[in-house]
Image 1 (cartoon, protein in one colour):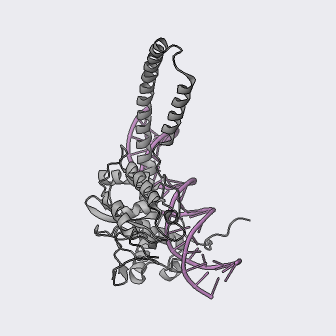
Image 2 (cartoon, chains in turn orange, yellow, brown; image 1 turned 90 degrees about the horizontal axis):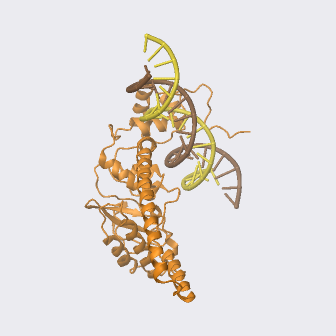
Image 3 (tube, chains in turn red, yellow, cyan; image 1 turned 180 degrees about the vertical axis):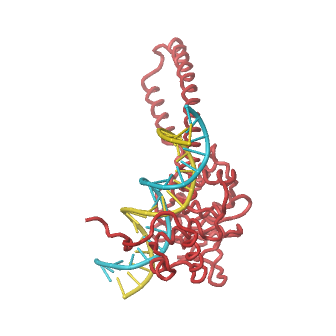
Length: 301
DNA sequence: AACGCGTCCAACCGCCACGTG
DNA sequence: ACACGTGGCGGTTGGACGCGT
């Protein structure tokens, strides 16, 4: 027994959409708005699955979709966002105004993946050359050392060296790699089409807030269950939900809800290391972390 | 012109999270 | 607490298209 289909498929149209179907769908959505996809086909006079209608609208018919090739700027941003977010195409698409998750996903799979693989191959080739040179040099050095320090080195010193080596391994940069998680769209800030600041409704926020109508402009805000960073990007600020950064929010608070500044400082250091990685040239306002500390010290629980 | 092959991308599929009763 | 319906997401597919032979 297979899984029940999402909708009755008998008699439903499949495959490419016709201009007539597009017109019907567009007309209906413009008149009644998005949503209720299940009942939409019937009401709009379409012989399509609701899912199919939604997909067609979201990926093709929506008026705010940007047509044309991905620009070099978008290309660059896409690579950086992917390095931070992984295959969370909807999140990435939310940062690229007018682009859909499907488009981003396709572009990544057909263009950028190959580009990156090529670059990695080149880097790998260069690295292999370097490694060979280093090995040769290392052999030379070892031979010289052997001659100079023949049997001079004590066992205790060797143990000490080994310990130092281990310590160096321990001190390797630790970077949070993205893991696939599902996020509530309503919790995430989304860049408006006019590139204005993000706003979004905050749930159960604790601390000082300034309400402006039904929306709240979130700034330097920290709560137990919803941590939001203000991040400066390309001269403007945007808000990054801690979930997006895979930060376990709760772990930065002790059982009494008091901020653990030691952990926060480590987080800050790790984040700066991530940002200072060679291939990360994002213009980044480091003050966000400081503002995070400032605001977190104001928390009253 | 015909064919084979590779690439691209719109559309589909199945899974999962969330809301609701 | 549970079942069910719905929307949203990411992975995959397959047809259209371009290019080389």
